[in-house]
Length: 104
Image (cartoon, rainbow, N blue to C red; front, side):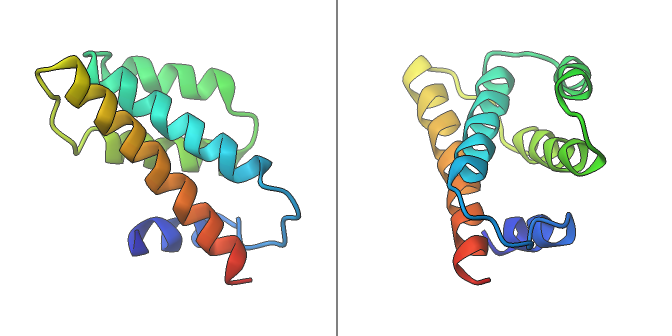
């Protein structure tokens, strides 16, 4: 979690945010990234989707970090394990975001 917090701070997300929408979006994107990774979507395909969906350099950097971390995690063999991993990954990123906002 410490690594995620540092990464988010370095990407300029330490500015005051008055809404949980950002953290929800980050958690959702992380869960989607890991879900795709767990079912065998290639890293290059995820990166292409990220490029199409991201509008700012900061968003692209966050998404790239997310994808890189997702691909450090092994694929699981059962659907329940894949779902658990995707949910865990999303919650981890969301929690890191909330922690960063609390520490401001």
